[in-house]
Image (cartoon, rainbow, N blue to C red; front, side, top):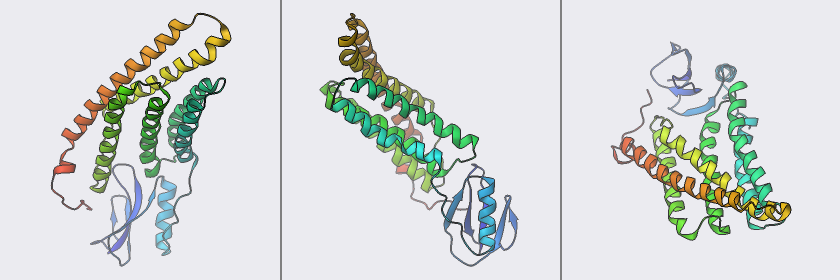
Length: 270
């Protein structure tokens, strides 16, 4: 058996123990003689980390876990942003709704900025890829639940929120099952469209509340038509987003249903 440091076809680099090879070069990786059973080790996300992994295992010392980097911190920041926005919407004070809108825009910018920094600085990691999608779901679903609590969504729309919540849990579970079987589920177009509708609907609903309670009393202008338009737009987009959520979730379950209902064979580790 031996240590295998390799660069896989999906771009993820890492080190693992692999049986059947002794000091050979395989798939741009070096097999280091070592005795042990199959186990996945630290994942490296750049060539420098891959070389460090190789040298560390040559010395007989597995590399330490990579420290939390800036893109990952930006990704995780969307979770406290959710609680900050929820607090601003629930405990209203002058211009709290406008501040909530600003914080939501900041949270949206982190979704763009973390990916840009990770690509530009070669900091792409498996943790970042997984948590980026997960924190997006936490932010959007958490805000929809908050909207029900503060009256931005009518009570009967709780059914739609439950549809969205169920879909996100099912697809997240499906991705975890796929990862355990060494399969990657690419993002589908319907899912991306669904996310866009959700984000725009959230922005429109918070804008409507900000216009109604923050700006109408201050300006004295007749802005009722603008507030009504934002409310209508937000509710309409939320409805469309729910439909796209059900559609994209059903598409995933049909296309990749074998992961849930297929045979329970062990993952391919070749």
